[in-house]
Image (cartoon, rainbow, N blue to C red):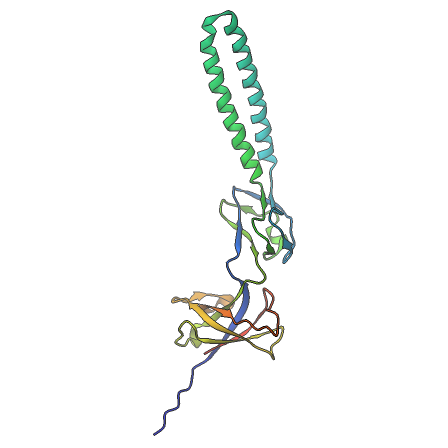
Length: 233
């Protein structure tokens, strides 16, 4: 009797996604006023990405600046009084404390105003869904708005349906038949697989798999966002 070892394989949807992207999140509560970059637009460090509505923050900063000026005038007046009346030294201490408080409030208002503009902290390309969906949307502190990714740092994200699940281990062979070039598959190897199925696209319970593409000097890497079918063995 001869036994022949046949590998099991399964087909699943795949998408090319960024590896270790920089997540651009809101630093303050607010409403998105404008998205300053287009989808897949290259950005440089320091480029403006997102601007939140800043009318309230601008007014708050201007009021704080006026209060600093008033506190400075009171301190100047207290110094003049103390020059002729030694009892005025007590007023100087109070005026200095009020000025320090107003300076702290002004600096805080200025920092909040600065956070209404979100800038890129690294080079890459901007990735998000739709500018029209984001514009005017309220966001909370820490809420994800978009991502900045390196186009050369990519990986394959595979959603393996529960009905087609097979036993997999890191290093398993993967072939990627991408829609942009289905006749020339990319080779990849499995990096990790979720132990728990989640609801994915099309309301299908799937295991999330991540595979790393093998380098091929004869062809460029696929671009971000390309979809297709993966054969996992």
